[in-house]
Length: 454
Image (cartoon, rainbow, N blue to C red; front, top):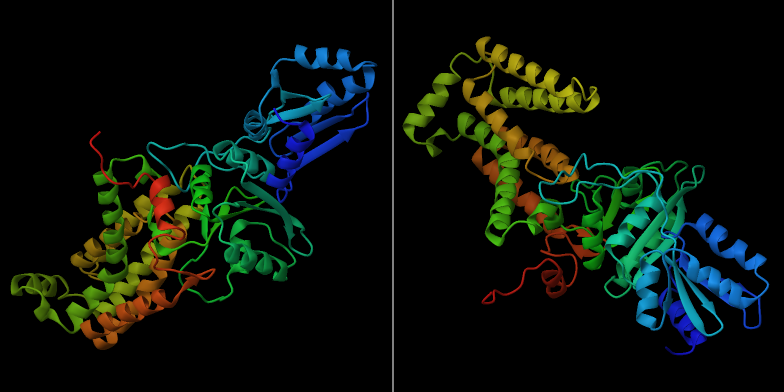
């Protein structure tokens, strides 16, 4: 192995921008001792007890080296590549008299990672982020052991001084995105930042933007994948969620299970999500347009069936749709606010009773009950809830357009949304781009490569 001083200089150059990269130099013995470790990965109390204190007590260098070698997990390193690998795995690197030793000092995390509650997975990892920012950095570093992974620490909130960490891979990160993010963080003028959602709103320049341009996720595996895609991760202390940017429309439709399934199964799941999104957005407005203006679109038998089911309903289809959509919104909101033990049962029973009573009282038609259930189920196929909420809000203007102008109004509303999405940017990146980074690199890391003979 080359001169230890050159190795240390190389490590400093590679980890220069990472704030959790620590170097301690001690003028003990003839040549001195240098300790190198990653603060987010190592237990500093263990370093103090097993390295610093014995160093003070050993009069001779040879005795200290024997002490190091007697510790469990201690090894002598002979090449620079092993140094980087050990460093990224939570080892403390000790340079002494031209030799290099590594001592396992992986931090024992006291705050347990939480189980994924929002983005559940069938075949993927079941652990999500915790509410401690350093635990989250450790989890991500374990999944992404690269010397190019950088960590920057900032604070947000003039009163709360909430710790915020930026994580990115210097090999893949887009410099314009990183600089824009740092400028946006510096411009935040809020007293209290206590959640990732608050920070997301503060980073979004246009306050009334309908669709999300920053993704919130609780999954460490998704965050590690996003790092490899050249995205920037933002972690906020006190919340088990991380921000990903830039985020394009496709990111909100993809799920981590897509990487676990075979190609055709994954494509089917993605197509089903897009179909669910279109149904959620368009179907209520389409019902209003057909029943109020354009019944000739349907076959006569189906049109007569719908007209017969609405015969006793005393008000236009617009009010019928708005009434049922608001009922579903209230059921979803109440299921979130109620205690977990009774939430699902209460909302399910309440929904059944309300639907049956409304149909028997002839306040809504039976067709409307079917459409309401279909729309609610379709909305839940969208894996990222921020996009799910946005689609739920976006359908109301379409319902209004359909009630005023019929099928023409529905088409016009869809065209307006398409133009809006085309013009939308996420930190300078087109929102309707298939990928947020280099497509060739992303296809490589997601396994979307050409078929071979295996």
